[in-house]
Length: 299
Image 1 (cartoon, rainbow, N blue to C red):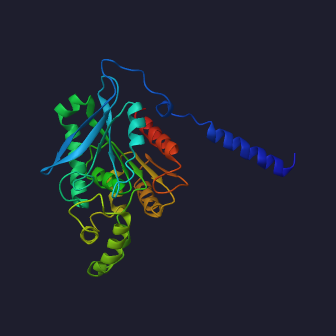
Image 2: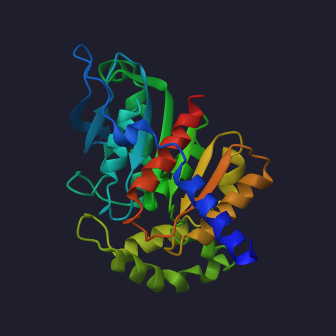
Image 3: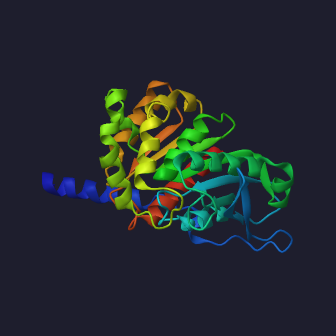
């Protein structure tokens, strides 16, 4: 057999093996109906620092208690990833989705600090025994999964909350803080306009009570505390799934992944997908990666 034929055959076998990987049933099959404890969706207002945030929980079928995923949207939140919520629920998890203060009709003023506080409030809500019972949820088993800015929230909040079981990062944003680290603190305000311009380009229409300049100022003030690589030691004992795409955020996530490995974390995995920031043509692959990660937690 010629070398070219051998290589072609090998490539075909590798491709066949790749496509033969098992697909999660939660991607393709609805669970059996449970008339006593059916799958459902509950919408409500989630309290956070005097505001009542728009929120909903996808409640899994069965008596539970079900492990919980809190799904965190990005900036400003055009891609809400609710297809992930549906598939995660089919896999037996409750999924909480909410809109931060000042975003998408939730009252209050939007800021990154408020979004951090709102994420902490969402965790507290799910840990409340009465709420957990109502939602058939396990208040002791909470995983944070965030996209873009939501990934920043998931990483930061979990790093400061040891009881969070695991973290899933989908093109997690560093909000520009990593690029500010080499800049002397007395010179960081020179970056105010470029950061504000970048935020404005993302779109501010769904957000209230803020401006690109106010958000850029917040990033500059908190650059040291929010540095992503420095968060790695706080997450070193927990599973972390890092998913990246071709959106320019891979380098900072690669650095965070390397920092986790340096701590000795053996439960960290990184997956790169050849797609855009919204994973527009990789939605099934994204769901499969998330479901595989959650399945690993339950083994």
